[in-house]
Image 1 (cartoon, rainbow, N blue to C red):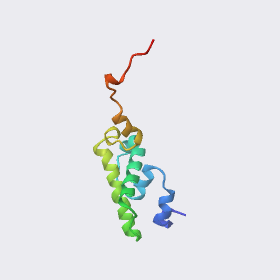
Image 2: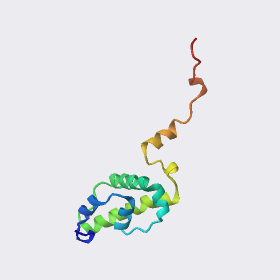
Image 3: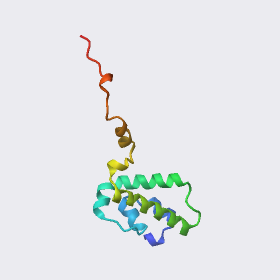
Image 4: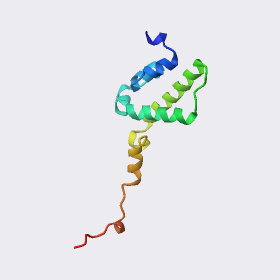
Length: 110
């Protein structure tokens, strides 16, 4: 079965890489940007969709919905970078824990 024969729902289940999503939805992209940020783009895409709630019921509107949020997720990393965007929890936590006040350190007891 080719991509043309699949419903939107079936295609979404089969897509796995950022490049596959971008190609499927016809979003033009710079391969170098995607190569460096592919996981961040997909996570941001997921976060956008989750925040919006369910996609529209009809396939044409749903396709536009998914394309809009994928495009936005990609553009976030064209205009910024992974360290600035902090999509993943580990980067979010690192932003808040990089400073340790001197007062919090104690000398070892002998």
